[in-house]
Image 1: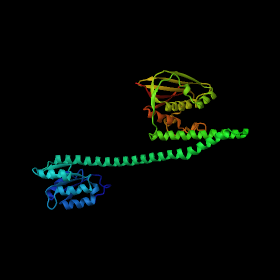
Image 2: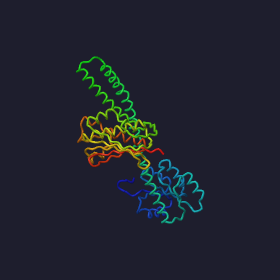
Image 3: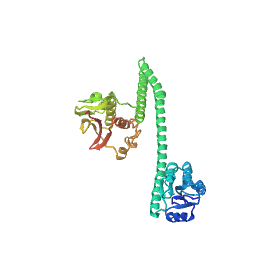
Image 4: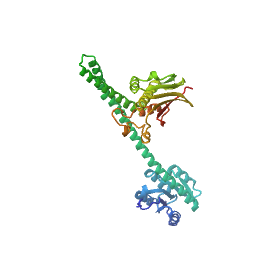
Length: 375
């Protein structure tokens, strides 16, 4: 039996009941290949039983006693269908060729007397095809494994989403509702303080749960767009209460330059993207500075830019900024959040067929995002 690790040359099997022909075939192929020889169909099948997985190609004569070449090839197909099969036959033996094609499923047939150069080239091409086929089979198997792993991961994400929705959001909603009722009851100053802080923490936890669910749903393609035509002269009326309060606390001024052009977007998701990016811009802006919001046509897209004055983003952080739950160690603290805002924006924009662009500018950071213009 041939040991693949000790002999890197491909193995081929030559079958002929005439010893002179076997010797001639071995001389042609021995420099490039490890050549196995069989003097009968029975002998060939015995060698295949021993070394089948290592044999790239079988080259067999048709007219042999006891078992023809076609019969040998027909048996080979059942065990090793990937093995390349070549039949050597007489020039006028057309019936054998037809049977070889139908039953033996041959790669090619060679007529006697063969031309050594042509025969050698034919076998070289056949072995190359076998090698490529084996590599393709390995890659296909790897892709199947990767696909199954992704399917398993998607199933896990779906189950995780159901778990979060039912096991966390349901009791959390009850907590928030009862806290609201409690807050309307007669309370001492200390009790009111405790309830207010509990409500604030509960709402923060609810926001975290909602963000995780949006991210998972976007990755599972379970977020459905409701695109519509939008024309804006200003976006300030879309800024949520949290960002308005945050902006006022840092004494920031919003300066808008919005061209009133019609673009296509899911309005609800657009407002989410706007407020998440604006929240980041406010968070890292220098106090008493200006945040610019610009909107204009760029090719077939409407481009929004949100620009703040503040520190630039470190290069190492910029490379990972769209990764979920990424938080720069240099800025990690409890007020920063989970690092989901930009990841979610990136996912939501991809649903619109666009993307998010972030770059450092002089004394600040510019975030650009895009929507298709209405045609």
